[in-house]
Image (tube, rainbow, N blue to C red):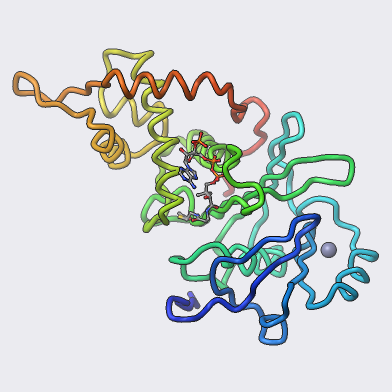
Length: 280
Ligand code: ACO
Ligand code: ZN
């Protein structure tokens, strides 16, 4: 696999215009040199092509016919959809997606070789089309048992619960595959916060409903690996040693936080709206 590490490079771009959002970039992304130092890079929110000037972008928008990501729509409920895109079949789109997401991902090496990955794009639909809010990539074959390679919520949509939906979706795919899965390491700080919140929510929910259970059952029911379960229990301070045995013990504080989060009445992925079979 061709990949480059960008650790020592300085941030090149400053701002990106995507649809009606103008966002600051966070990190270096290897856009071609002629696009790398423009004050604002214009990215078509539907095909992810990029332009150095407002005029060339406007010309493109006039011609561009896409109103959703290119690929199979495998999930739809209300205005939320997921599209599955094969890196081998949609190389340009997937490379453009990687360039865009690299602006907000520091620790990852950027893969130019998109062939081994599937990309799951989450959109919110309105009258003008299905707008990308975030995505994750997944190796077609992961020797390490990863069910997610890279995850991103576009900065203009962060902290609204979309990351939680992306993570939930990745585990729903694992459940259909009848496997447990884990995100690729290392996780970024934000990645760890998002995963820890998800793991905690799902595990506490299961433990409150199933008082008598084992780590294996918990893992099978949630598709979360035993390692990630142990990591989360440890972070929650929920593992106790009692009469010669390890027991899980949820503190009042953990349960109160859980109740408070539940009261937020968040949207969930509805497995009944997911039309997907594992690729062969
Ligand atoms: N500060 C504190 N907690 C946070 C933060 C934050 N900035 N962001 C997320 N969380 C935690 C919270 O518990 C939050 O729940 P709450 O809002 O009810 O408190 C929970 O995570 C879920 O938050 P979401 O709104 O669902 O997450 P978001 O849509 O913002 O996406 C993501 C999270 C994908 C990690 C996003 O921050 C992102 O794209 N970051 C940049 C790219 C990145 O670092 N990706 C992960 C790399 S690791 C990998 O790819 C395997
Ligand atoms: Zn376009």
